[in-house]
Amino acid sequence: MYAENTLYFVALSMIPGIGPLLARQLISYVGSAEGIFKEKPQNLAKIPKIGEGLAHEIATANTLHQAERELQFCEKNHIRIFLFSDEEYPYRLKNCEDAPLFFFAKGSVDFNAPKIVSIVGTRNVTDYGKQLCKDFVEKIAVHNPIIVSGLAFGVDICAHKAALDVGLHTIAVLPTQFTQVTPPQHIDYVQKIVQQGAAITEIHTQQKYDAGLYVRRNRIIAGLSDVTIVVESKKKGGALITAEFANQYNREVCTFPGNVGNKTSEGCNALIKHNKATLIEHAADVERLLNWDKKKKPVQRQMFVDLTAEEKRIVELLTTYKKLPIDTLAEETNIPMNKISPLLLNLEFAGIITALPGKQYAIHN
Image 1 (tube, rainbow, N blue to C red):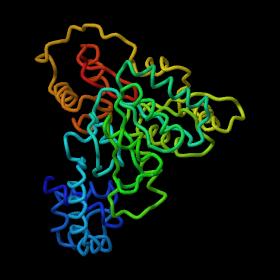
Image 2: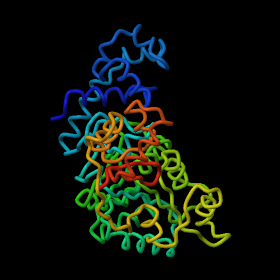
Image 3: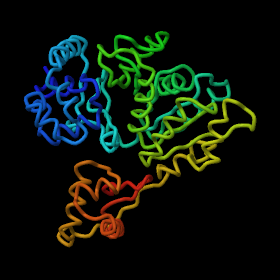
């Protein structure tokens, strides 16, 4: 059984014109997803970006019945639903402005694991690209990261296979509902991935096909991880869109360079050329970038009684969420950006927190 508010979250997402951003804004104004369906249209119309037209759409929507069918389908097929408000919702994804209101998941994996890597690339991967991908996953396996990709032909499925082969957990982010896995040739791999990780999607079973679903999928791939690795990519393609999302989220982007004139490397070379990705040749380059190769040294922490009230708020927040970017810390603690930076530096010098790539911070272990 799902929590009662799950029904309203799903129903809200089914209303035309209500995306994740607007849905969260509505919940914030009204107080709950359930409250939105009980609020008077004239009150909803006063909420920014809603207006009378969308307020009428919400008031007359018949999506609660559709959502009930969706929950019945999920329960029958052992599909979990992670709400944006849940503690188990991936904190990396939650830090993205356009994060899904919820997503469906089959399988079992820690979405808040210490190390998560997304690997993407062209569907027309070369033998060289396949070997790069395979070698990279084998080399980083010692760190036990979760490998995320999109189940597509080419680099995506290569990354999933490599993870399965070395015993790593892997997450397949689907651009479609579970009843319409694409490409259908990879349905068998979904079963293996579910046993050794998870398959997830934000698309409900009653959603009509739309090419834009692939872009929505790509933002989740970028948002789930610490770093996005582009193995091979043409001048245009989904991998570059994923890399662009990762850059917007202040996550690391890395790519392997290719020969000039090689079509499957044009996108990778362009990312490097325009300073949108770090050039890597080996797994060790990523290990250094993410500080995975540094051995932890014992640090004498200052007593917490010596901390100021603001520093204590920062430490308490990082203790709860494990890792957060500086802008989220400033927002959640209500400390101005120009003031929080020196506070973070003091805490780092004291050995209490650690600075991570992408202007993120975590409690020092």
